[in-house]
Image 1 (tube, rainbow, N blue to C red):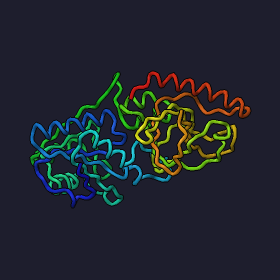
Image 2: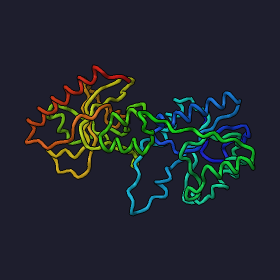
Image 3: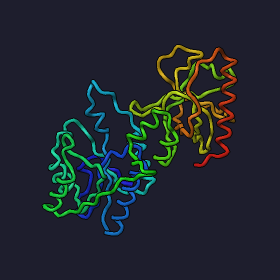
Image 4: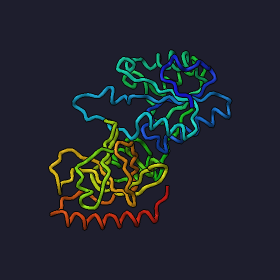
Length: 314
């Protein structure tokens, strides 16, 4: 896969079919556009180019009085998903405050048509672009007549009459509706981080945990609670149960942490990067009367996880 990170790096080719978007999560709806992009390129013998935007516009243009957006995927995670989907040409469009001021007509004419080259563009059902998102379908159709390129609108992808979108997936994860989020993503939601040293309490209680610190400040962490998870460690799938929260039975922490008790695993993984894939939400985090009650509950949680392993499908 070729990855371009500036307009200057992209070789001009008027025989190009392209699409533009943030593609956060690279979910089932995005895959419909991606598959169509490859299909058009093959049928019409065009170069295909997927343009994704980073940083996310809502990060660059965030306002102090509004909460910061939390993303489903980092740019590197997106690129990996694109490569797995068979995308050969990828442009990471560097989004800045200055670039955000670009009028939509200039964006299409100067950048897409004259700099990159464009024979055809695929757009989603809610496609808006350019300064203040003033660029819309009507503008594109006017320019397509003027510049002689074609437009194909991709209808929204829905399941059970529900349109799949990144914002809906984020809400499901925040609301602990992990099954719905994973169904829309078509993969298990995951968080990457570095294994750091904790206070060692888990090992003292006979339940050693890996404390994982996320390295991405904008990555969405699932809501506090206990989850059935897995990680790939040294090319092996290792199941476990994770707790996200403030550990109220033992601490007065105000910030949530992620720790995972891996089953049948006792290797030293400190300072390593780990991806935790969230398969199933089990229960909310609780405050127990003490260590004994805490351990009893973990035994019940572990049984739930073991039952889930029997039905697990990747």
